[in-house]
Length: 270
Length: 303
Image: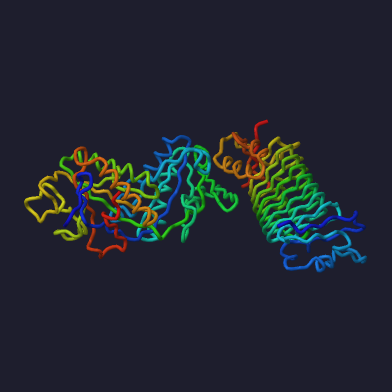
């Protein structure tokens, strides 16, 4: 069955909250009912029908044709099905997802995958700052699922990561994996300054090192770890490119010793 | 007891009686097959019978590096016990003392699903003294315990099945010790290929089959005198004058089907060998149907 398709009519005049357009919310709704869903975030009312041409289809699979950096909260709270966006998205894409699949065929704004609990989020372009991280006032970031960014990620990717896996095929900004509680963050390109800043537990894999490593990590030497094989195999399901970087011996840095110090940075050979 | 004869081998009209058990499986890997096998062999030593060893355990199969979770050579081991508590205790002790200690080893769940789970790494992890690391990848959770040659990686839990069956058996009888051993070895080899079973006795073979009870106080089992050739003239024997040697194969399987499949494969191998090179008669042990609910009639398992 063909997907339920939203085709963008024009660039929106205001930021839009697309969190209502998830498979579980649109199940059993007619096109007219969907078109009436409010998406606006200002006092000017905007409905889905004003922004998109809507083509009937299976709401388990949603296609959004034509993206915008003003399309905020795409797939937020998604618990089943799949959403595909042919373009970029704004902030908080896939935030609080618990299951399903969200594919963004473009760039994503800040807080993509924020506090995700399950499912998969793939960003084929770049991701903004605080990928998977918590919003202000929240104590825990992503706690399950897989996030994969094919491009680069902004600063503090994986902030307060609790569980799950974040994969960044390109570079990452400063403080990647800051305050990590656990989980796995893999970066194929060079990371910015101080990856793993104040991390307590968890694993950060760096394919091409970092611009500056914290002196509060202890060098444990290079090892051919069985766990790294398991990690590489698991990563390889989503990103063969990243998995190749982490097969073979890795240098283990234990830290952040300025915090709990039971985390690790695993460095691939240059 | 009537017997039918296939390819010159007399098949007793009897059945093997087996009973329900709890079981689990693990996969042990290592840098080489030699060390994976070493760890598995050590772990399954002294595990021939639940009566004296607490569990019955054995190597089920060797796994190539393409068939293991970490891409290294491995061995699949099955463990059987009469209760979940005993199985947990045996698993924990044996993995802790024999696999954790073996160079380069790692340990993973060997069943996809079961009615319950047993702690594997979740019990061993405390050896890490606080330096152990949990790593969840998808629905699997692993423990990484630092050890002197690197890390011991161990999956957190392994499924337990309550559908396991223990005590399937074949009694192999021949005109000489060499012929009986040859037939029994052929049967064990064929049974191993059937999968999901172990034959827990040395090399899969027991030469000291037992009967229930003893003339001595405190002994729950004693030699099966009816099948001892040297007592043929002294007791009520089950052996004809042509039988000089008797060996038994005990089979534990993850399911009743697995036990039946293995017994069928073993019977076929014995029959194919024939009495000139192997056994002249095959029987099975039972307790009149009073011990276990699984009955494997030999006539139903013939090739």
